[in-house]
Image: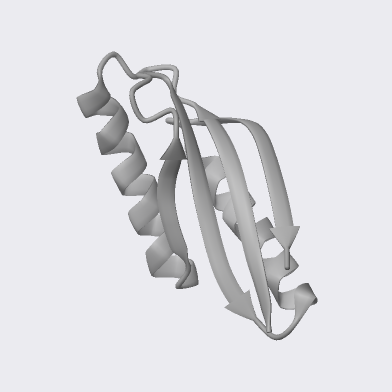
Length: 93
């Protein structure tokens, strides 16, 4: 059994409040959950208006599958016009 943990640091340029930040993140998290059946949550920078860190977790029996899914998640986030990816990190245990 392998566990994939993916951390995505985001910049949300149009966010002027925590409420608008939460709206953007909720939409993004819902898309990720619905399309990929993974766990996703905001894990850092909760009180900052324009920054967020999302954590994505999944379990699989193949490293290749984890890599493929996380790459697809990266592409989905990258296509969202409301956020910019500033950093990312994938760990597999």
